[in-house]
Image 1 (cartoon, helix red, strand yellow):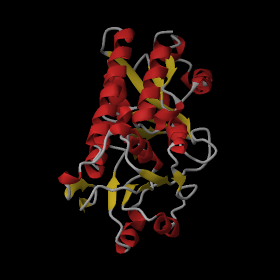
Image 2: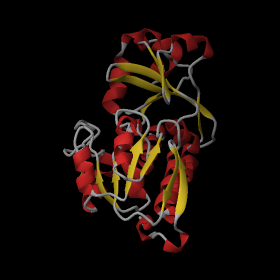
Image 3: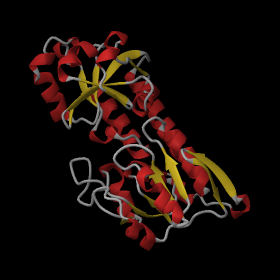
Image 4: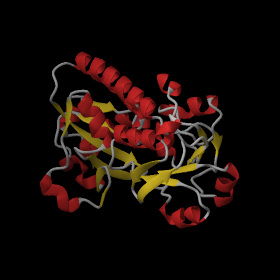
Length: 302
């Protein structure tokens, strides 16, 4: 995509960027970036930033054989991005060997950099820390664009997403259709999507309205992120709409949901209105957002 054409104008440096741990000041545009968060790596690739290496997560159905997320793995390999360390197993020595002039990391999730931040900063490595769980990918892309001098790349990625979303929304028909986002048996957990979340932002761009957990069940929530986590026994009562979109799911997950006896009386099940959001929707970046659009456009117009 055209983001690779973006280049930092050295006349704009030094510059400051606000992030989760304060303000980062860089004297010059970084030329050797490493990412300790696979959830942010896709955005660095999307804006055309000079990414040298990325941490890899545990190999599974969401990744390729190297532990890179499938939605951007091919692009990363084509650009020569190396594995910084596997299985999100933080490795300070590997970080120092990579010799970055900017470290990008997360303040949340299994790849959180916060436990190691003091050690990294003691080595004099400029570090940008972001929370991907509560911030839209577009906002994250703009922050990363600002920090790396690739604002034009961020603008290009956002414009392409907007174009594809508008195209799909036109096919889906009148806006306002209410849906429930459901996390079904994801590593043994069950959850309801919040109306303000990265996933809900993508659905909203398609003209869909996300209905959150009913307030009457707020006391049943066991954990909160971009989803409200509840017990399996509470799930049926927690699904408010006749259309269900399954987070991080494919057709096999839809089949399992439809076959669950605890959910048999749900209107969405009885009407056959349960759809996958796509495996890569678990973490939203530019590439997974485009995959979400394609998956939902196909499912909802079938």
